[in-house]
Length: 266
Image 1 (tube, rainbow, N blue to C red):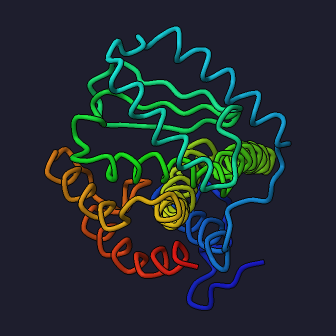
Image 2: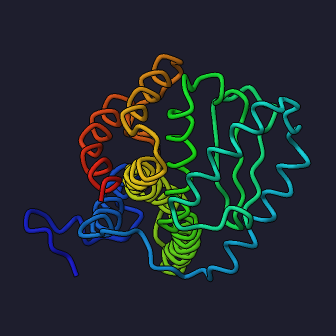
Image 3: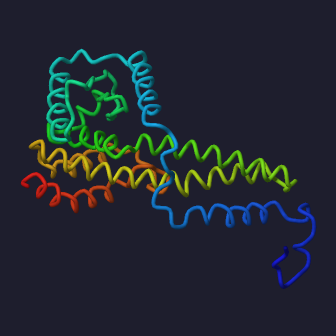
């Protein structure tokens, strides 16, 4: 039903609507409601066993693609830090596999299936064992909060939703149906998935701080690590990143440190 009070032209056939106006109307009426009042992107629609299987498959591919570090000292250091953190997190370290890879990027990851990977570049950037513990603790935090499962579930629902929207648009012979569906994909990605990703990162920061403090590491070093990471350069605007802007992250971490220290002393 037409809701335009100024002119009856809006009630003409879809072909009378300009391309720009069609895109704007669909984006405002479909994407905007989806963004309001959502504390989580998606419920768990993917089984925990499925996500663990995906993690193990990913680990197997990474082992094939990335060379294992021959730096025995680095391997021992990361293994010991991981052991302490896992014990503090209530995990059994013997059930986990920890590996340092000979790659120059400053990165680390924890995969479902109890796999921890650290790249040599991250060890070079981290100025101390405490800073390295902050990175690994953060990644363990992602797994504790089941962020991998959330992301797989969110992506699954996103694909279902986009296919349904595209189908409905084409069935109803809406002009520019494919373009509108593509626009919705961008809207969901930048309006939902990425901001939620930043929330996940901050949640993992908090869990990581709690774990590293319980393991006997200094949580203040987490803020120092991100100062060092910021000095590496190559960042992108926070609005287009799943990671918070470095300064925002440092401030958030500093605000969380008292809680971590208190929890470690309890």
